[in-house]
Length: 223
Image 1 (cartoon, helix red, strand yellow):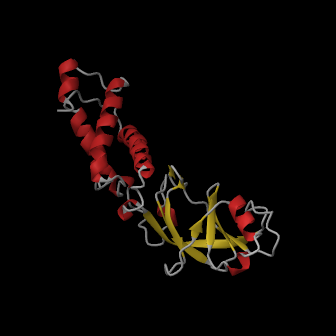
Image 2 (tube, rainbow, N blue to C red):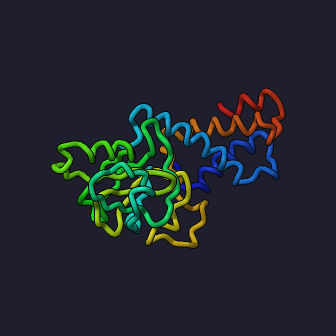
Image 3 (cartoon, one colour):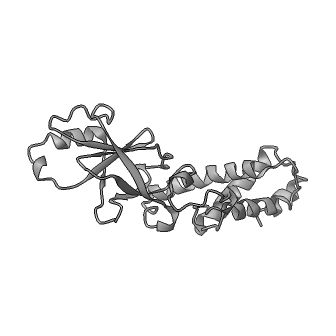
């Protein structure tokens, strides 16, 4: 993958300088364009079932605290039996949406010994009210509006591995609060970044952010 956010921005900026340097072209603007196309191409890879195998793309939150809530808040009021429901105490940044739902690679106990199954509130209600559910030993979770919900567990925390659409530094117990965003990893694989780079440069040039000197420059940029 491209090493850091700063490196990714520099790659695009250096190519743009071959056309004409614009002092008003900010790192923030370049990064926003790179992110837009990065997300698009990651979703394309998810369509091909190629995302989950790239473990390095996913960020790990090793110990996310849980609190107990009621069934109504968990969108699970249809559960007939007694059910204890836990929820992440703080909101987490939304995972990127893939073709089959949020790009959450796994959710486990904090020692990774028990892996949970992703579902939806309505699906879990139907499942829990089935005749044979009492024999089901699996653990489930679902994502709604910034929180993960967990029925029938008594854990204090969980481990989450996901491709987040936002900064999760504040949720990492071992994170350095002084780390600049430019020094964080940009989670796009190398084989996709060249394509991301081309799309980003093309949009910046055609948007009028940088005036090109002529047709010859536009051709050279992608040679």
